[in-house]
Amino acid sequence: MSNGPITAYNVKTKEKGVVMLDAVITKTAKGAYMAQGNDGKGNKLTTLLGEAKALTAIKEGHAKQGW
Image 1: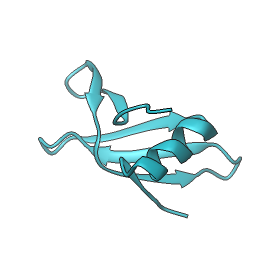
Image 2: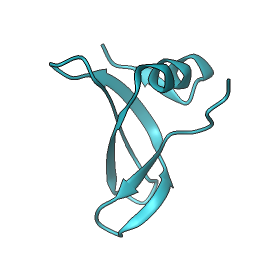
Image 3: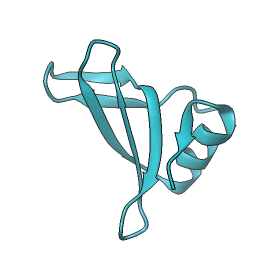
Image 4: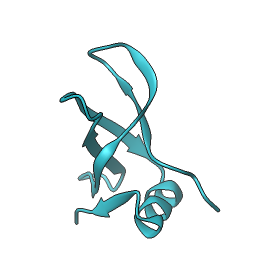
């Protein structure tokens, strides 16, 4: 099951589906998965992920594990 790279909404430029570079996936206090990275232009991106997508992204090398 390949999900491809992690995408997020860029609040600053109002673009949807921006590919996240240098993504690091962490767990929130309530157990949700959150990916943080950048868009390659200096803008920070953050998005919430489901457990399956988060673990698949780590396994496929699209993100690093941060916990």
